Amino acid sequence: MPNARLQQAYESLMQRAPSPLFKKARALYLRKYPLDGRDCNGSLRLFVSQESIEERIVPAPDEGERLAVLSIHPVKLALVHWGQPDPAPEQEAATYFEQQWDLVLPALQPQDQAWFRDGGHQSLFTAPKGLHWLRSSPMPKEQSSEGG
Image (cartoon, rainbow, N blue to C red; front, side):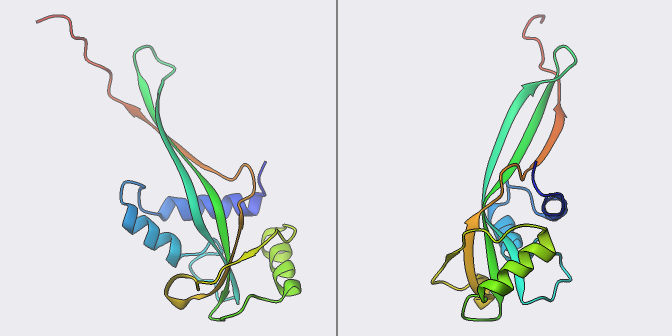
């Protein structure tokens, strides 16, 4: 079970994010808006850097019906030291993770390239297990090829 705060923030972000069908718009959105919320103004912000998207068709509980299921999991998250060229001090990052997300400081991998549009220094880490967004929609019944 993922951290409740992080899961709630992830779901909120995903509800507003463009569909995976619109790759460029989605990528721009995920680089622009952090998990911390649109109104955040802290020196550290958490972004989705890489995600895994799975789309599948499954049988629905009712005979002959199907569901389209979309499952999205973040693979990598980015801790961004907003507006700063260097990574945040380790203690500052540890405090941020503890106070904001109720998490222990993960193993961070500092990156040479700044976050989107020189947003600040970024460090990547593996997203916590179980963090996901799942949606399903009914599909039209398949038409029988019999008859004429």
